[in-house]
Structure formats: structure tokens, C-alpha cells
Image 1 (cartoon, rainbow, N blue to C red):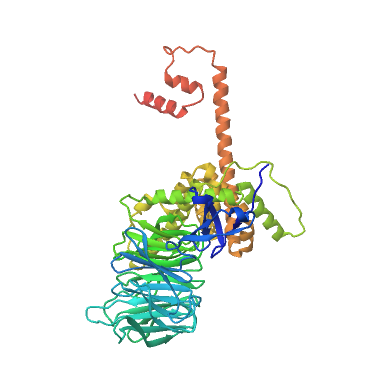
Image 2 (image 1 turned 135 degrees about the vertical axis):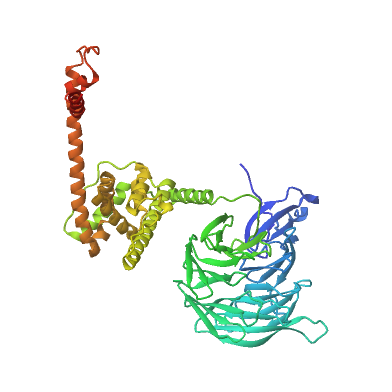
Length: 639
């Protein structure tokens, strides 16, 4: 039996997350304990051996050393790179750290507090940026203060107390142009205002920079983000302001005159950035969507989806239309702003990602989040294949689905849809019959990709139909009889035939799951093309199968849509007519095969002398080839 003797109590400066005994014992039998604190720091404590005259009396520990320079004590809220990409500044609750990007070492830890206050009067940092020259950093706090800190000494050189009446959520620097030496800083706050600050030198011997308020732009809602455009012409430079009303307002920087209002997000915009040529603006918000805007007229080019939670930051790669986004879903994503598609998905953070910074050349990016990590992502020479990246993302998604929820098979989906439709049609009908068997299919990558192919085929068919109608209308007006060239993307087929070709290319085991991917609008269009195919008598069996499945799967939505009544009646009659014709054809062929089998069975033991009978007589004896016999007899009579 082991006995434990109370030795003493060790008290740390912060909450203890873990501890470990040092492998080396001190002289005299003392022990050393390493503590891991909640502030992301390490403390080493020494616990000496009690004296012989005071056995059983607890001893007090002594702190030997502390390792607290590396790492943030709380989540990182903002990341900024110097102009030469050699240093990075990250800020958290009451701490700012300057890092050497090359060797990943911490150069300076800056405690953010007012110089005239005690250490307890710390500020919650929200945003940061390097001033030109990379010797000072400016920090915006939740308390509404602006703080300038010297990177070399770590001292606070200037504090603008109550620069705003609310939290300063965003700030941006306007770099000086060759024709303009003045530098300006813009800040956006929860007090519904955007303020301009000019950067000047203090008049004392230190010559440290200071901030002087220049002008104010009053908004109607809280300001979430503010950015300058990249134009070097002062008359064309714009300023973008995102407010709590889910809109982005664009103003001219020199006169603060209103230019554009970009609306389309359903929830507030949290981050945005413009390309170097100021032709497009990309924005992301709490609605998990990314919108790409044209800055000429304020039109929406495309809406992109991919993140599973709010988008916290967005940055363009210089001299390109490609951009990075980070989100609370712990991921970073790389997007192509010209082709409107995702290029890369970067995983690695253990918690939500709050900020990112991109180097001038795009060779690396920095990301920081609530997991207190600063991650460096470097560009490699490996070639990225978008299809492989998309398949890998789908595989990860299905792996996640397998562990988070129960996969629904086709029978479950149909039963649920049937039950919803029956409840809507007759609330008193209490039918609970379940299918005796289930389809041996499961949603997989192939079924999802097949569903995407079907949706693309429907959209292409709609576009081709509109172009054909426009061409015919133009020909009627001009009185011409020209022929329109077939679409090479559809292999020269007409829209219904091309859609039938795509449906036939889907494997039968994946067809039902592929159809479940289609939204209701595409289902309505698909039924329209099924009617056209059934009118022409093409693919009757496949069209009937798809029609029955879609009606079962979307029964409640179809019943509620009155515009589907007439097409459904026509579809019903066409399916019945074509299936009857197919049944008659199959029955006729089966009867013919039975006759052939009966004749073959009767004559299987009969010996045929090919010397006496020709091939013509053999076929004629079986009751076949009467047309051939008649033509031959006619030729013989003419001779």
C-alpha cells in the first residue's frame, strides 16, 4: 500500500492547465515542477526538502523562471504585416506581439496599457497596422482608444483616449503617393462614425508620430469594416464602409460624396477588400456567403458559397483577382475571382480563424485565430488540380456526415415525402405502411457529381432554347429561312435530346440519389423536358421512371404549386400512352420470339440437305422472307 505525504502547495500567477515534474532533482532532495498556465505561459517552481527539525511542516515553493514571451494568452484578433514582409504584428485581449517572419521568433511582447496608468488598466485590442517605416504600430481597442507603440522599445508613445465612443472594429492606412506626402488613417467604430486621422510628428525631441483628427463621416448604423481603394489618383480614390444594416456604401475619399450602395447580404458584412485595379470588390459576412461586386455600376457578379460559418476576414493577392478568406469554421479558402470557383481549402486551426495577412508577392500568408496560433502558409510549386481538390472536399464532407448524422436512403426520403403529401391532402388518413424493401443505394460523391451534371444540362438546355427562340423570331421578322448552327457544347443535339443523353449517362444505381440533389426549380424544368421527350417518343421508359420518382419525392411541393396542374395532367397521359405502346411492342416481340422458338423446336431433328434447297427456300419455309421470295420470283419471270 502506497502512502502520500503532504509536501507543500505551489501557487501560480494564473489558472493552471497542467503540470509535470522535472527529470533532474535539485541538491538536497528538492524537486522542480513545470506548470502550464491558461495564459499560454510556463512557470518553473522549486519545492525544497523540509528540514530535519520541521518534519511534517509544509514548505513554500519558489518561482525559478517564467517562459511567457512566446504565444498569446488569449485569442488573436488581428494580424498585420510590415511593408517589407519581414515583421508581423498580432494583437489579442491586452497584448501585442511583433514577430520575425523569417525565423518565426517573437521579437517583442507589448503590453497594451496607458502609460500613465497602472498595469491593471489594460485594453482589449481589436485591430492593428504598421505605420510607414515599420518602426511603430497603431492599435484600435474595444474601449475606443487609438494607441501608437514603438516596436524597438515596446513603449506607448501616443494614446488618443476616447477616439471613438464605441469599439474600433476596423482601421486602414492610406499610403502616401509620389505627389502627396501626407499619410492618413481611417477608423470605423460602433459609434456609427468613420474618422480620418492625419499622422504627424510630435514636437518634442523624440519626434515620435502622433494622430490628429481631420474629419468625420457619420453613418446611420454601426461601422463593421472600412477600407481604402488602391487608386493612386486622389480624385478617383474610394473608401468602402460596411455597416450593421448589411450594406456596403462607397464614397469618394476627397469629398466624401456618396457613390454606390452595395446591398445583397442577408447579415452584416464583416470583411471585404478590393483588387489592385479597383475593378471588383469581394465581401464576406455573417451569412456565410461571398459576393463579388463590380465597382463600375455596383452590380453583383457572382455569389460564392463554401464556408460553414461567418466569414471573418478577406484579402486579395496583389496584382491578381484571387483572394483568401477565413471563417469561424476553422478553415481558410483560396478563390478565383475571375472564374468564380474555389481553388484551395486550408485546414489546420483548432478554433475559429479571425484574421489573415498576405505578403506583397503572395508567397505566404499569416492567419491567427481564437486557438492562439499564428500559422504561416507558404506557396509551393505543386500544381493544383481543381477536380481533385473538389473530390477531396466532398470525401471529407461525406466522412463528416457519416459521423454526425444518419444517412438517409432513397426509401426513407420517399416515405417522408409521401407522408408529408398525405398529411396535406387528408389529415384524417392515418396510413403508416412502410416499404418492405429498401433501395441499396447511398449518397456518395458520384451521385452528387451526377446531380451537378444534370443541373448544368438543364441550365444549358434552357439557354439553348431561348437562343433558338430568339433566332427564329429574328428570321420571321426578316423573312429569311437561314439555319442556325448547332451548339458544339451539346454535340449538335437539340436541348431535350441532349438532356436525355446526360440522363442516360448516369448510372442506374446513382440516378435516384442524383435526382434528389436537384432543387425544386430544376425539377419543374426537368418535367418540362420530359414532356417534350415523351411527345417525340424518345426514352419513354427512362422518362416514365424519372417522372414517377420525382413526383413521389416532391409530392407536397408539387401539390402546393398550382402551375404544375396542367403539365402533370399531360405528363400522366403521355406516360400512360408511351408505356402502353412500349408494352405492346414488347408483347409483339415476345410473341414473335415464341413462334421462332416453336418452329425451331419442331425442326430441330430435321436434316436439311443444302444441296437440294437454297437459302431462299429455307427462309420461305419458315414463313419468313416472303418479300425476298417475291422479288426473286419476279426477277425470274422477267428473265
